Length: 298
Image (tube, rainbow, N blue to C red; front, side, top):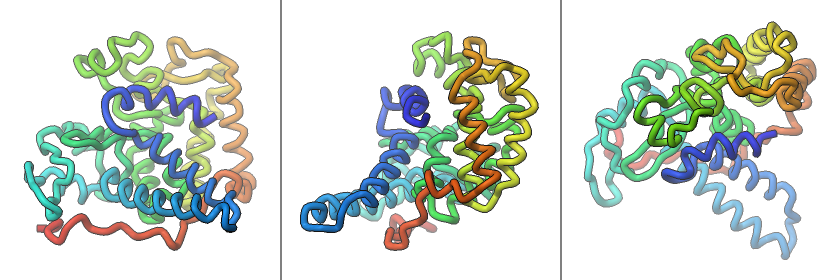
């Protein structure tokens, strides 16, 4: 249920630069699962060492460079450009003027999230629900970051949940950017399908993340929204519009994953012990986030 949706969501980013948050988070989860499956014997030792090394590097990279909160946004806004050597704060030479206007209003004082993508001179500041939920469930996000993601969802409920959970990406791309990125794709018009559409299948991932962070009331509120409409609407694949108010223009009905997402969310909320099947606890041996240079706060 994750992989199919992920491939579709990520295709827009992968064709342009880097590896987006969904791929990074799923890769982190896969590595941690592989680590738990390997035997600690002579044959498995080499693989375990390689996986541990990659996990440390990946967690540092994601927690340091993909993470965005109010303070980090303000730091990026004040970046100097064309810095050199290991003391450089602006590691990717991001031009502050490239920060989109919407993100300044979107970012609450309390809250944060993993942005869509990072590469030299370029950052995709969009919110992607799948990547951030997997980051929580895999413990790619630290406990503090996980709580901040939940704070963001609560603070920006209308934008990220609206009238039907859950907004797959925010905000939608439109106009010239839509033409360039999607090739004028008629299915991915603004606030539709993978371009800011609302996907009920994501309800189970949101619920799992809420339970893990001790915020089941957020999941309950989202499930109540879904229950009010999904049966009446014949279990659509996705919804359109800024608030997710309209059944998607090409949405198929009686979608198995929409139904399954709702049922799994209900079952987890009724019995949170099910969370252990899809969630990994924090690895205490994982290295903490290290500041990028001594001049970071200068």
